[in-house]
Length: 428
Image 1 (cartoon, helix red, strand yellow):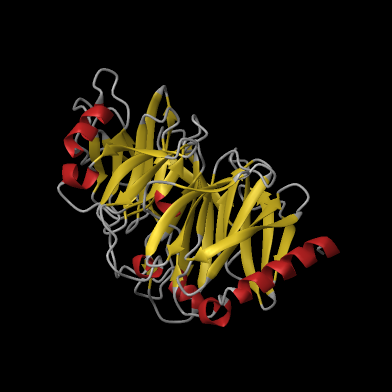
Image 2: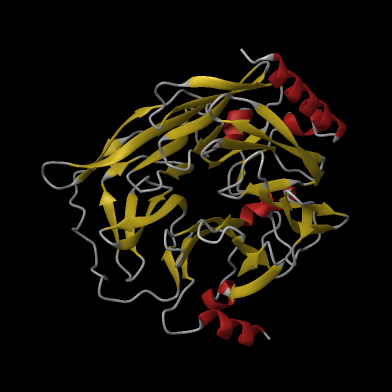
């Protein structure tokens, strides 16, 4: 059970949220927007709107004994361009990690659940696993690419989460070895070291948060709240940040949760459409967040730190950014060339508005921004960047196009070519 201090903090937070008019109008709507902002439409109540598939059947996990290399074309000798469409297929989740000295991409194809591996240096892109898990809507990867969480609906209502590690058989092929986590997990976040998870479920009285091993075992409840709508970011070893779901209908709030003792601290809030992205070194004592919110009819991006809020010279949403782990004050963002008139971020979440992005590098300390790539121009198609991920060396940026789910990589650093400077001159 929570101690009295935690309960008081949560009740105070609840009052703030009601004052912001989030309340009934938003929490009990039949629309759910998942991580990355893609609309999920379907019948059957809340869980259908979390991962609706267009049918009510569950995902049958099957093993395909067809050899993986039977129809694969060897493209390992062809260098990858700076901007590369890794796959045109709709993807559920991707990771970029180091394998045998090379930064490597792994991703899951949404329709089949097949796992692919792609090189960052060449056009090599091959299926590495025969297991079929159809209709997977979300995948979260361990940082080293060795395991992943498949998330899908079972029989139309139940959110199922399956954790599996990729292991090699005696025959030299890969297989999935794993187990199911508790049902109806509505929010899932990995610890920075990939050793534990924080997940949230709902009940009639609100929400509960649990920390467990990566496979879901040894879970311990550390959090209860009368609020049912939280996004979770386990961004630093001891701090889990919680933010109310963004909407133009009301103001938002954010808080921190100590992963060790479960202490809860309300950190404040923002205006309409408020959302945050915590820095990887942020704690409840040393705050550093990107924040987006509506200011009048404009969407603004700012940095929240110990010295208060400072405006940044870009207009974008916080969830279209990723923090650098090498340079603490640096982030990379997908930045729309324009913001059509609308209610943000709701209209974007629901697919009523799409963006045409460029990639920018923002320095929160200097309050400056630098154009990295006109990716939509270079690709010859509209790219609305979500799920941004940096490679360990931060030489590559991986992102998904919200419009069709395709996966892209952008080389940020050229050893001999001053790519950034040339792009800036071209933009001028």
